[in-house]
Image (cartoon, rainbow, N blue to C red; front, side, top):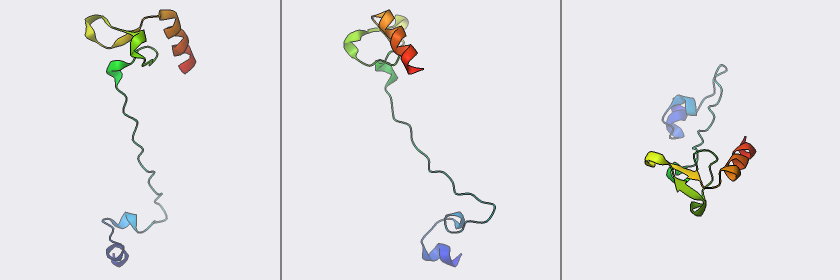
Length: 75
């Protein structure tokens, strides 16, 4: 606890590594993607090549064949 106070740490886990403990992996945040402006099937994001989906839920590629090809390349 003395080391905890001297190093200005909030928890004892940040200071000591007990034999049964493993260091926690740092949390990596995922990049923020604006799904409203990308194709739901392939993820394409060039606005000139997209059309709105029916009922206003998302976007789809105008060229269906190119969309299928891009989707198969992603997987």
